[in-house]
Amino acid sequence: SLYNKVVEGKAQVYFHKTKNEVFYNPIQEFNRDLSISVMNTYSNVNNNKKLKILEALAASGIRSMRYALEIENIEEILANDFDQKAVDLIEENKKLNKVESLVKSNCDDATLLMNSMSRNWKSKFDCIDLDPYGTPAAFLDSAIRAIRSGGLLLITATDAGVLCGNGADTCFTKYGSVSLRTPACHELALRILLQSINSHAARYSKYIVPVLSLSIDFYFRIFVLVYDGQMKAKESINDIGFFHVCPECHTFYQQNYGKTVPTRGNVKFVFDSTSPYDLNKCQNCEGTLKLVGPVWTGKLHDKIFIQHLLKYLNTKTTDDFKTRERMIGMCNLAYEELDNPLYYILDDICSVMHCETPNHNVMRSAIMNCNYQVSYSHCAKNSIKTNAPSEVLWDILKRW
Ligand code: SAM
Image (cartoon, rainbow, N blue to C red; front, top):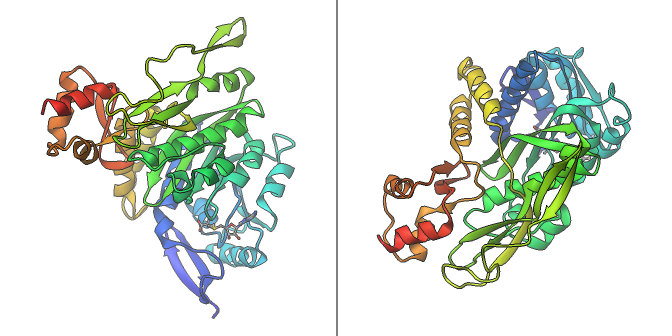
C-alpha cells in the first residue's frame, strides 16, 4: 500500500508513506483535542446548536474526520485543500472512517472558497478552522466574511519567529503591527494576532470576542467569536493600544488611543490627551523606549466560556483525549490569568536588578501586601502578571 495508517482520537487516517506528501503532524494532537473540546462546548452553550464547519486548509483531513466522529452536534463539515493530492486522501479517509454523509471535500483556494460562501447566511459557517503552514494572515479577511454572526473562528499561527519579534518588519507586513523580542513576547504575539483579526472584522462592521487565546509550544491557537454590529465594531478602538517597552530592563508602559463614549444609539470617540509617563524614557533605568503595536489590549479569554470548557473536560477521560490533563492545566492557567496585559519574568527582572531570585511565592506575597493582584501567565513559567505599576515591582526588588 501507498499509505501508512495512524489512529488519533476516534479517527483513523491514512497518510502517504513517502516523505510527507500530504502534511500530517502528530505533535498537533493537542491542538486537535482542544479544538474538538472548544467546539463541543460552543455547541453546548448555544442550546446544542448543530454546527456547519469549514476546515479551510485540511491536508489529510484528520481534523475533519475527528470533528465528524467526536463533535456531538454536526450539520456538515467541509474539508478543503487546494492540493488535489490532499483532497484525494481526504476522500479515502472519509471512507475509512465511514463519515461520507457528514464530510464533504472541496479542492479550491481557501480564500476564493470562503469569499464565494460569504454571500448569504445559509452558505456561511458556524465554525471556520484555519490551520495553515506559518501565518494565517492571508486567510483572515475571507474567513471573517464567511462566518455567521455569533460564529467561532479557530486560528493557528506557527510563524512564532515573526510574531515574537524576529522580523518586526515582516510582522508589520503580515499583521499591520510591530513585534518585539521581549520576555513577554508570547503574549504580545497573541495580542498582535487578535488586533489583526479585529481589524479585518471591523472593516465589515463586525467585532470579535476572544474566548481562548493560547501560546502553545512553538505556535499560537486562538478561538474567537465574531458578531455583526457596527457600534461594537467602533468601540473595539477601546481594546487597541500600544506598548512602550524598555529594551534594557523590560519595563513596559501601555498607551491606548482614547475612549469612546456612548451618545444616543451611537458612539463618540475622545482622544486621550494626557499620558502619565514620559514615553521616550524608561522611568526605571532611563533606557530609550521602543514602540510596539498596535495590539489588542482587551481580554484574551472569556472566563465563563473557560468554566464551561473545564466542566466539559471533567466529563471526559484520557481515553477520550490523550492530552486531557494538559488541556485542563492550560485552561486553569488561562482561567486564573489577570486581564492586565503582559507580564514580567521573575528571573529576568532579578538579573536586571542584580539581585538573587526570590521564591516565586515570596514575590507574589510582596506584591499582594502592596494591595495589588498577581497571577501567572499561561505563556511563560515564572511569569508575574499584575495590576501593579512597574514602579511597585522595582521598589520591591530594590528593598530586597
Ligand atoms: N489542518 C491539518 C491538520 O490538522 O493536520 C494541517 C493543514 S497543513 C498545515 C496546511 C494545508 O493547507 C496544506 O495541505 C496545503 O496544501 C494547504 N493550503 C495552503 N495554502 C492554501 C490555500 N490558499 N488554499 C487551500 N489550501 C491551502
